[in-house]
Amino acid sequence: MKYETTRVLAILIGSFTVAAAGESDETARFNRVFLSEARIERLREAISEQEEPVWSAFQDLLAVADANRERTATVPEHWYVPGFYRDAEGHRRAKNVLRDDANAAFALALGYRLTGETAYAQAAIRLIDAWARDLQTLSRQDDSTLSFSYHFPALLFAADLLRDTGAWPEASQAVFADFLRERAVPMNTMARRNNWGNWGLVLAAAGAVYLQDEALFDECVERWKDFLEHQLDENGHLPHEVNRSGGRRGIWYSHFCLMPQTIAAEILRVNGVDLFDHVSPSGRTLRQAFQVVAHWTAEPDAFPYWPGDPDQMLGVAYFSYFEILNARWPDQHATRLLESARPLTAAHSAPFLTLTHGR
Image (cartoon, rainbow, N blue to C red; front, side):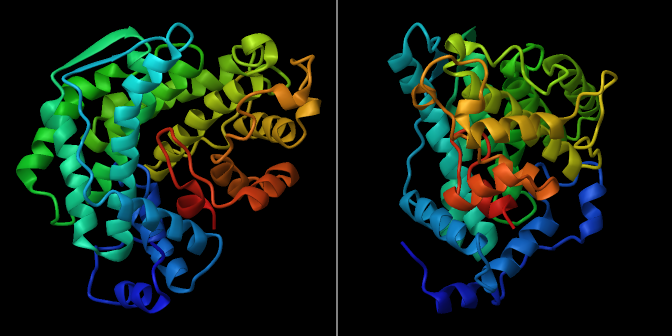
């Protein structure tokens, strides 16, 4: 439902507080996983002023949070996801239980941090605790690790938002941390060379921060740099991705590689290592790849790897992560796309990016 302005303002200026950090805290190792305390505070200020695009995106967040207040977790005893190109229906059915719970938990946890409504926190905690408690076994076959790598981080982001607030019992936090360390993080696909590796990097980096694992964090930094060097060509194209399905899914898979690379970079930046402007030994940069893909997304007929009708390409519009990149490097194509499509969300790892990063 849509919140009345007076109700929102009452919540935002009321007694609910969580110790907010200053801008400088975004350069500290093991700060927050994805959304720093400074960012949460800035979002609350933007909402109090009904600042766009944050205000409209906040309404979307509240609608999702309200719809999931009574949500019951859908945890399977055994996690297994068949390969998409072998069994698309079975693939979606198996992975969507985690997607839907994780994204709901993130919406609820973020809703709690922005409004102070304890019902949101309680609902998020039920979902987080269920996954840490009830999942018995995890397969590494077919798409099981990939799907876990790109859907579990939203649950982890939710857990991070609830730590140190007093809403989540410490005993339950300990169970989740053990599950994360012993079972969830080892599911990451960071060793793979294509987009699987980038999604695995998101899970590994988020887990490293949450668990304050210095060695894993440093490994993630180096892996991020390695991806930049070896996944991009001299033109900023992604050779592993652009020819997928004869090029028909080439833009989609380019997004599907750059989105996790961007999310991982943001996790690392919030925790003191800013790689956004990193230049690889061969001169590859994230900015170059972003500008290339933004151009293709705005003008699909410019994409050189698909010989057919541009309207037949799939997944072209999956660009919510441009919110992070365009804020740093304003691009005419990305700006036009964002302004026409906001508020944006995503199914993988980081929903509600217009809200969290669209100022």
